[in-house]
Amino acid sequence: MDQPWSEGSPIYRQLRERVVAMILEGVLKEGDPLPSVRNVAAEYRINPLTVLKAYQGLADEQLVDKQRGRGMFVRAGARAALLADERERFLRDQWPKLRATIDRLGFSAEELLKEPRR
Image (cartoon, rainbow, N blue to C red):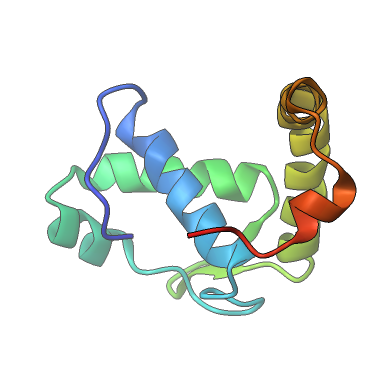
């Protein structure tokens, strides 16, 4: 979670996306605790309520479980659910544009699967 914040989106949304990326990349696994609200707020010099809002969104999406007095933990099945959602979003939003570019440039499947030229 060590990238600067962008101006285009609220910090709580960016923080949510960073946690989602950590789950998808396996940095945070099922059952792992999320970094504490206090630690994240102090490390990134943001309001604890901002961190809490991001974490609450993850809880509302049923990706993490709150355990009173212990913190929040990655829920079983969170990575699979996120992966399915990300794949569906890619196929819906990004693939059609990418496919149109591939077709326009006349690439074959073999060319696309070759090692990139440097």
